[in-house]
Length: 403
Image 1 (cartoon, one colour):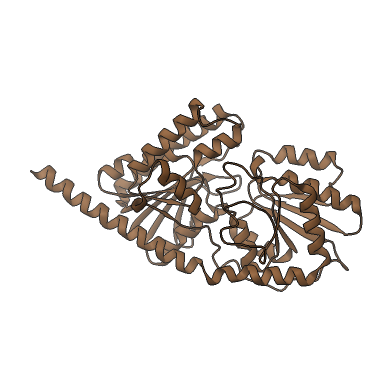
Image 2 (cartoon, rainbow, N blue to C red):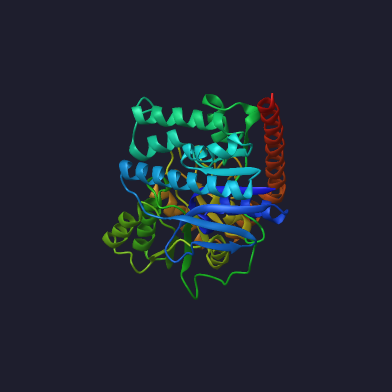
């Protein structure tokens, strides 16, 4: 098939977009990807057989109006690109990654002419918006976002979500169960695999790693404050390496300066998936410090699965979503937002190598129940089913037009 992938994100740094696109390319589908361009990236290149078109430069909006303008501008540009390339490539499937949900309407003309449409909802927007800006569900913008979500789901032929709890929420207010499925953000073992790590403590500090978005609900400031508590204790040499970008980066850097942690907390730029897969085995402990709350309780941590895949023990804030697949024998849970308890968990892991090894081994057993190899078969089956549905709709449209 000819497949178009449309995503308001950087292709190289978004594991979900890349995993699902590579899955289709590996089985022989021709894949075009339209996405954002970060500094240093080419406008167009071929990556593992896929044509990557970076149609708009990435900018970091900070206020609600600037965020909305950025999304609308990408929507308009992507609509032109997708429509133009559809006239040349005649896409069978258009796979659109949200946020925003209304990006699905960028494929309006291709759908009218018979393309199958998949909406892949990474984050459910009403809860995300309420959490980000501290709004109630009765706020006008929240109600508008919920209405747009409902229209977008109705327009799509099929909806994918990143969490079973997201799916439950969408079915509760917008989607029919038969039209919505969960595809978990699982690591691709072509990149993420266990490797030998050099011993810590005697010859170098313990290395902790956070890799992901730098936003309020991800709780990186909680991890930084926990590092301060450990540093004040002075008994354990420790470093925290932060990989990623986001709206909180400057504030977090200021916090590190205010706490005088510049020598042990290091910020690194966002890196491609294959690079982070090489970095994680060089670390000693993975950190998932996200806050609890309306959105975070429903969102599963992708990095938690990646830590498990490479054999990295993890300290994780206890939320309903992350407790779906991991239990107390696989990770050390701490109360979300509690930097003192997080510090205690980190110290415990640093002082107990057997505990680290046990947690890492137990966490990897989660892949006996769920693997990307199995999930990608479900994903491909959904794509094929949407294709068949679109073919039937197209044939019906032609017959109707002839009559």
